[in-house]
Amino acid sequence: MANHYTIYQCTNSNCQLRFPAISENILPGWCPKCKSPLLQVYSYSEESTIFSSLKKKNNPQSISVLLDNIRSVYNVGSILRSADGFKINHIYLCGITATPDDPKIQKTGLGAEIGGVWSYSPSSLVQAEDLKKKGNLLIGLECCQGSKSIFELKPEILKNEMVLVLGNELAGIDPQVRQICDEMVCIPMQGNKSSFNVTIAFGIAAFYLNYIYQ
Image (spheres, rainbow, N blue to C red):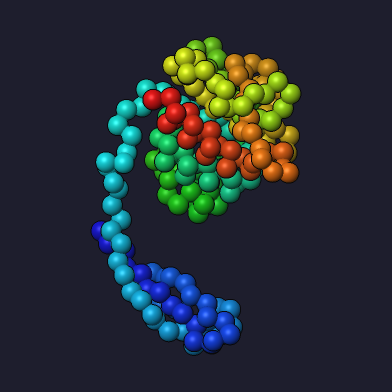
């Protein structure tokens, strides 16, 4: 199925705002910045197909993610969308972490939350202990004392069922959950900040675990 788009440009020479819009949508006809008339300058169509040749054929690792009290609904939605792209097996939502039936998540996840397998537990510690008993390898993603670079993980340990644990944006992973993690890893920072936003960190870690160790 093709999506049809139109490029609009502001006729005000001092503004010259240029932006795309779905052709079927009716725009008011004036620039959203300076209110000058808009001009349709280009129209095109894009096929919304999935390039199966670019899809990963084999997935020897089994990766799930545990969200330990993620406070931002929008962060949860973004993680759900990324998890769908990385074909994360299961998402364990714990504590105050919002669930996919939240309307705000449905807006941020852009439909990806519907296809993901998820479950909810009021306690991240109980959930983590249960996963550990079932033989899962728990990898905590947090910049803390004892963390090592995620790029230092040995390929041989990643043959087990893995659960990537992400913590609260302010407080981090529950200390007792951190204690039972098999590995604590972080993503090395190059700038002045001490850590990435949890959604960015998840994307980097999921990509690395999924595609480096094939």
